Image 1 (tube, rainbow, N blue to C red):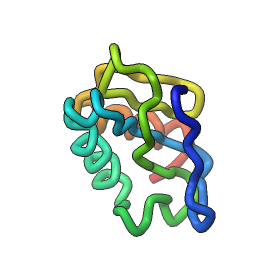
Image 2: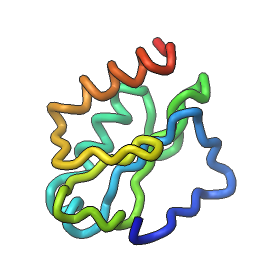
Image 3: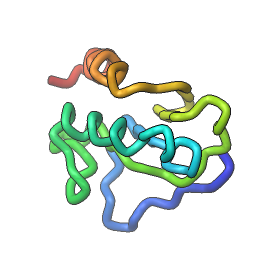
Length: 102
């Protein structure tokens, strides 16, 4: 990672941390729409970035240094490149299955 992301001290981090890069390259490739789709599917918002069961946290982070693959989403230690909004429902379904979440 290019920049170390430091969470807000009041943010509860769920079991699965989903970081959506919002560096210049990813931002110009619409990373906010990707983050917003994650938020929509998990029932989250700017004010509530962690699910009520504390399974998932979705945040925007500064540049991760993976610009050639942007937009980029990091889930735990895994990096997924060239993410589109259309890919997000499948990613969420897979994560819900993996973490036994509704």
